[in-house]
Amino acid sequence: MNTTKIHHQNKPLMVAHRGVSGLETENTCAAFVAAGNRSYYGIETDVHITADGKYVTFHDDETRRMAAEDMIIEKTDFETLRSLILRQRDGNFGRIDLRIPTMQEYIEICKQYEKVAVLELKNHFQKEQVFEICEIIEGIGYLENVIFISFDFENLVYVKERYPNQPVQFLTGKCDEELAKKLSSLNMDLDIYFEGLDAETAERCHRYGIKVNCWTVDKVEDAARLAELGVDYITSNILE
Image (cartoon, rainbow, N blue to C red; front, top):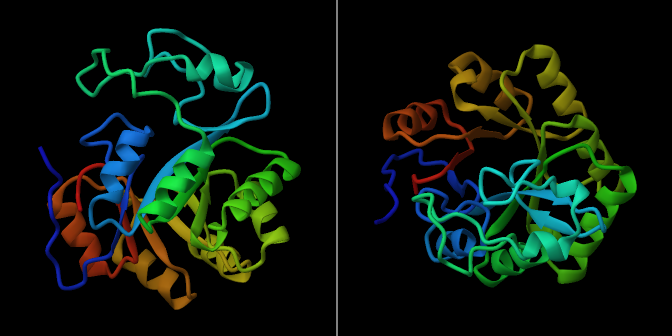
């Protein structure tokens, strides 16, 4: 059981989506370490805030897809969430190490394996919460190795307000001329659904000095097409 390797002369920087989620349970320390032990440039995950103000890595708003219990992340305290055992990739339970990690644990793994942390601010955060997330990572000594991504544009504006040179990528399904100009003016990059990227869009973004990341690419032929377009990053569950 292993990743699928990409061989292309224009190979983009590869980002492990939710860790190597094609091999290990997504957004767990196991998935992050699996990425750390491979050639990935970065490790992507999602951050939520719990009811008691802790930051955890989990994709969904609720736990029901990944655990036997159905809890809302933002309305549940950290210790309760931490007690949950997550499903293995085959849907079964049994591995007691598969728990919801803290954001700090994720950052520490990225730091240990010298990987860029691609951190999605999952829902809308208050400005003070975005600042706190940055300050926690800064306290670990790794903020300069973090790329923040979000579908919520305001989250990224908050990051840039406090840290103007911090790399950020706006998540979207398409990018027209108006959006490209906006991103360029704010020194932001793009993280686009791969099927929404064509040659014209890629050329436009690069013309405006915007780096392009594509999600979530799991087929070799799709990765090859994107590499031909000159994308800067590819985010994948299984391609390396």
